[in-house]
Amino acid sequence: MSLATRNGTPSVDAPVNPPTVVRQRRIRPGLLGLAVLLIALGGLGAAFAVTSVRATGSYLAVARPVEVGREISAADLVTVQVAGGQGLRPVPAARLDEVVGKRAAVALLPGTLLTLGQVTDDPLLGPGQQQIALGLKTAQVPARELHPGDKVLLVSTPDNDADAGAAAAGTRFAATVIDMVSPANDDKVLYLALLIRDVPAVVALAAQERLAVVLTEAA
Image (tube, rainbow, N blue to C red):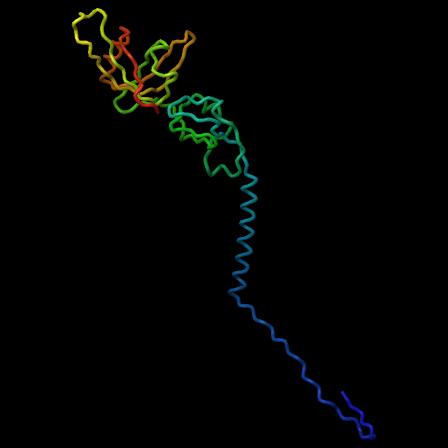
């Protein structure tokens, strides 16, 4: 740039400021790789979330409490929609007919998904036990309803044909309730798990109608 003087002297070039140099910041390769990795992970996470939401299926859930050993009915179950339920291994709703009629291997709680490990076809028999059935009048049942897993005591009653002076002490047999049903005639059929050694005596006493049932422990 030139400056003109008033007295006619030649113009003099004024000093020019040097241009400002902007230094470029160098990007470290490590940080750049980390940024790319984070972006990729974020994309994978979003894709997984979308896939999980879309993977919705119909499964069976427990609608009301079911005691251990009780037979499962359709009214005990409800169909629910679950997102990503495959990893939980619940029973698909389409397999309802396979579950109804089986027994609860564990106590089933309302609001929980049903799995095949919670149901069984096996009777509730322990080692060294056998199952027997007793036909009882309603008045002979010690509770309004007996449930699978209830503990009962079978007590022999005196023989009417025995001498009046004979000892009346009853023999006792511990048993576990497997199930109880009510036929059309309003009698009760009680299914019990009993030790093998006690089965012959109990069957003989039942044939003579000389058994009383006592509830000792509720399941």
